[in-house]
Image (cartoon, rainbow, N blue to C red; front, side):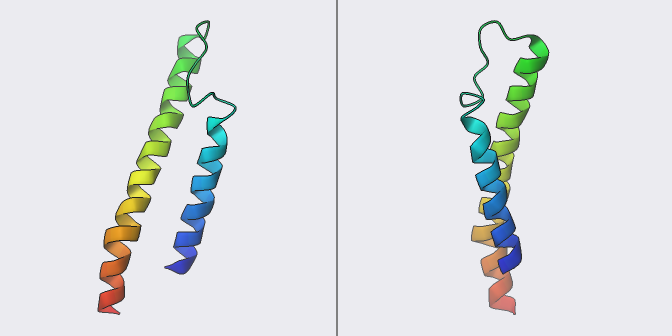
Length: 68
């Protein structure tokens, strides 16, 4: 479990690094639909990842530790 937690931390850092060059996933006014869609997808990926990690760190892992 500790290895998974470290990997999630690394993934979170990588996703956070995308925020600055993408201006927090805000497309410029002149952005084409594909670029807008790509930024929206990245934003959704980050939100899904945070939700997934939260569930595992705060629900699944504690439950598994009590059963071990």
